[in-house]
Length: 512
Image (cartoon, rainbow, N blue to C red; front, side, top):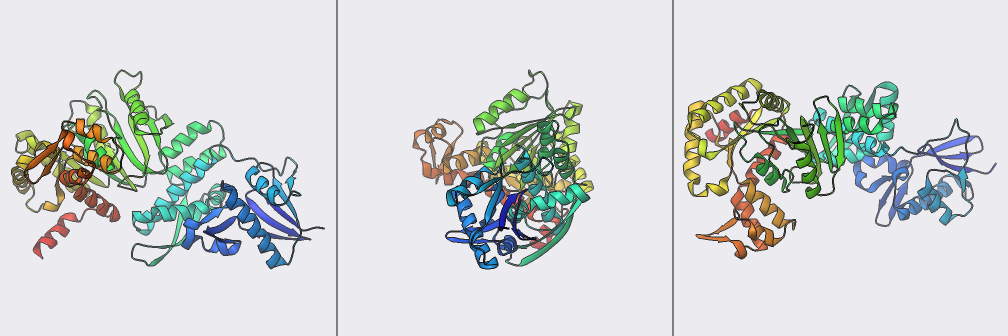
């Protein structure tokens, strides 16, 4: 009987007489180097960015290189030069590549009981979502830096089929991997991930129950990034929160104002795909995709308008890239609103967060109602033990009174808490940060920047605005915005997600 190379069921096997040898579907490909078999599988932890799975490969050149390497592997390992190749029907890319190398390649025919079904349209989304959830679970349970997320997610994604089978059969899977951390040390990770995690349970539900897949997938992917580090912006009144969030993200994600009559929590999630999730009071979740910020804002405007037939309770925006990877930013309704539902939503957002940014209108500092709000916030923080900071907003409108405002803020804070740390107070311009990043990254026309009345650059004692603004002024806008210290603070807090020891750390620093 002629040897057979069989490619089916997400598995590659070589049949020689009565013996069957399994060949891993992974291959290492970098420049002109190609490795297949166990050698590639064992290198996943160290070279994940250069290792691929043939069953998910779309590049025809890489598929051909893989097949040629498999042929060389069989020739050198088993001393076999000729063999029959059988490929399952739905693997069209692999089949076409194999036919171009050897016209005698056969499509595999199987009886119904053993036939593998083609992947469902949502399979990739399930695999991607599972890899994300597992990667964040590994980071949290092993106390790793968020900067390792992309690397760990890639490693997990390559092995996700194995993990998924374990989860379906046993309800849990063991994650074992090695990763080089930020200090260039090799960390050996071993942790158990189970269907006790809500997102994983929902993802398994999509696989086990193919009915209503879109609805089930939406509920699963909605929970995918639940383990991200969460930063919530709260304030006694709505005061430029959307502008500040846009400034942090460097994108016009929230180019709208949610009306006072609505109680919507908005989560902006650093993710792998651009998606928009809308959750309603009956826990129904609607999932959309968007290509750019204009499309996103149009959908947000329609969904959150008080004139719409049904107002959502929560909006979750997944966006790719950004200056704060691995971080979810939450915009909650204003505190102490006349609407009871607003207060409930603000409290929920407070509870789910790792870091609270208390947004302050500089014109309210020292007023009785402001001091009362600050006192309540301090009491809530002490009870929760959460990390926090104060953010004075709209610096662009108050730059002339910069020192006076900070001094007044210091007086109020000293009265409330003599041990407060100045490193927890930031005075920023979300508007300058947004326009500076958009201009720097060529995401806005220079003409539109010049037309914006609120945009100006301070060059020594000269104010530059309108037609005099140039592309190189992006750096000056960012510097004037003072957004970078706040971003650094957020990233540092996300790297150490332990309970707030910031006050003590600051006092030690000052004492030294």
